[in-house]
Image (cartoon, rainbow, N blue to C red; front, top):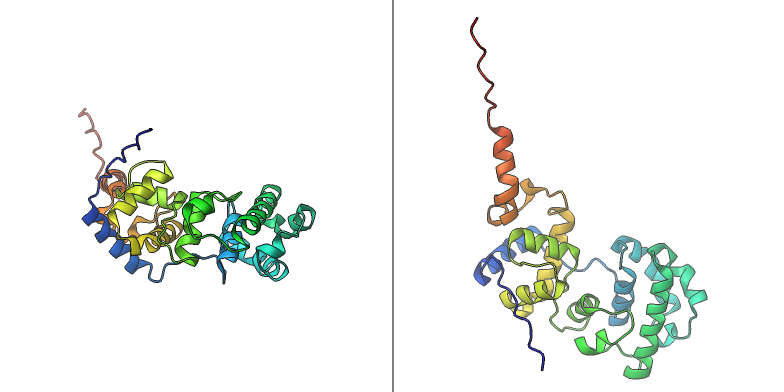
Length: 239
């Protein structure tokens, strides 16, 4: 039997992580997914479409899509030829159309047309990975889940509340530090912080946890001090 790999400890303790997240939640009150949905099915479809696409663009596409295909039983009757033009603007539309139809088929055949409420069952659906499953579980099904996307990876590693580039490792580290009822809002808050403040080129002067952030302490602050330090010009030789 294969051993479960040991999850490395992040630089920040669980108590420090919880304190940092409290500050970030105050900076981004009411953090939530920005995808528009009314049912677990709609959120699952929207999340599949959001791969390599902005939430704003997905929200422009889904209203008409949901009117035409309001549930998995309706979607399963579509063809890729019918579906592709409707989702083309989200990018990778051929792969996404196959994922959507495969998902709808599996939901109808294995789950009676209802979106399943477990990680195992969700990730067994075509086109559904762990991140997508966590989004649906945490937001639409009332099951604690902590989706890890590129923003969560970047922000958590910079601050020091996680360590690693494997989304599952970072998910485990954050879940260990945060209470279950905070898992989903932790992800939503880190995503918003990554979109608004801790961008690839971060706006550290606007960050609520700048003083606790390892990236700021080790990279940004020294660079700022160096830029402000007076330059010492060599003395001119006397004639």
